[in-house]
Image (cartoon, helix red, strand yellow):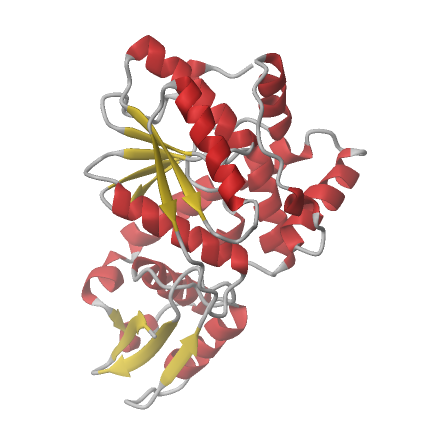
Length: 318
């Protein structure tokens, strides 16, 4: 059963709330849940539909969303984007375009809610695991995080797709079923439609279990970073002085460098590149021409580069 108290735990009900509405199961359930709250608590809620122009069905879906919002008495904002894929996958490019719209939309401390649930977390966990991610890549998404001037919030993360479907059926809520979600040539669709159902035949509720594990990893990562910052704060404030770094164990140096890279908002390097950074700047004697470049396959974050200047490692966007 979906708890309204749990649903609004991370939301400021006195601030403007947008619902990211695509017409699918998760966003439709989210819309209905918060429309019920709106009627009870007079919340300031609007919906937003982003037309990605990737399917011949997009206009039909847009009309469906407009019809649902009209029936509920909710204002619907419609935004259209042209997806430009430049090295990253289509899913990543679409997400980036969508989040750019969210960032432009939100005023100070306004909130946009998206319908990610525990099954989405499990799919991402497997996807990153099979691509060879590090520990940071296995952590679950944050329920609430900054986007521009406002916040992006995922109120349904602790609920499974089965629970959302049950709610929709019990309340006679119709929603769009995108047929492309069943095309298993896409990695995420293969995980969703083949891998997870097979695993669940032996281990039930596997998505919930993985979602909890992913959340635990995130908490561990956050704690580790806090401890790292307290112990080696001088490197994060004063810069990465090579002479001082060389006094530390290589495993600690790697973590300090990775944390500094995260703080710069660029993609984290994989193990091979991290080892190259250590070899170039720590195990050797770096000079003005020393440089290591890297990028992330899906281009979700900017490429990075490390150079050397006046005794310091310099991290920047490539």
